[in-house]
Image 1 (tube, rainbow, N blue to C red):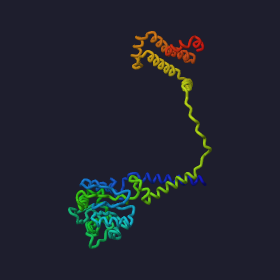
Image 2: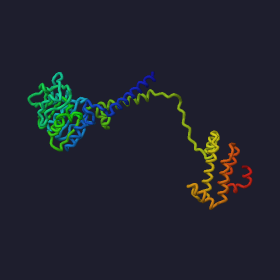
Image 3: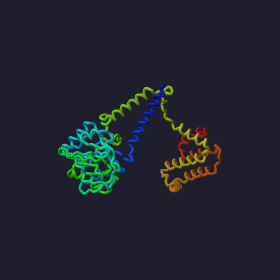
Length: 380
């Protein structure tokens, strides 16, 4: 039973990691019309266009706060609902001189209530040729094929109408500011700005604020965006606190339910190996692999290196080393050459290998053997 609970907790952790990976990957589709998306229904082009017109641009993420002072804020299809407090703060910002562009297919309940947005029942059929706008320089726009029309009051001036007369966008003055409501956000999205007069409509919207005014895009209400995580999000937001508690519960559960497969075996202390042990190990490896030619080659190279060190000659290039050795120490060169010639004509027995190795050692370290005396040589 305890093992089954551990598997359940592990499965929950896998689900959380998979969800994080899914939401963290950039998507080719943006139904929420994010300004971080380059998809056809994203709004990254609107952000770049605003920056090209000289407006400072930013994205509202992490915590929601309307821009300071007057400016323009885009709100595209909120997927995380506005709270009543957030909607009221947005309304007060507009009344203080801000411009809000609120584009959503079905709207947000609290935001609709705060700004008096009334949406009609059913959907109206819209085509690019049927738009009858009031905006300056705009005669036709392209967007979705179906849209939920807006019901307007006397204070709300229609900006876009369908051919049947249904309002799909209007403008309203509120205090010192303005709100522009669009029932079809696609008219301002990436893949539609080059159609008919959509680009001119975006320019007219940006022209409602003075040059150099701040332009903001609300990404806070586009749900969980892992690429915009900040440290305070884990404490100040509901989803952050929930994920934090989930991770704590998984950790505590695995800690309490975890069991060992046996007693803890202490790790043995590491002891340093001597040079003799390494030499014996290498020799046994070469002997088991029958690598006599390789062994003699290594011994010959080591002998040449010892001779070069004793004679004060460089090892490389090898041809120059031999020429210099024949000039400075001809007897030593002759003895070394004779020892190396026996390698190519030697047999394959261990006795012959030992004899050649002793001869090479005699060439490399003759002084050591002389000091050892005749008794040590007889023992060898």
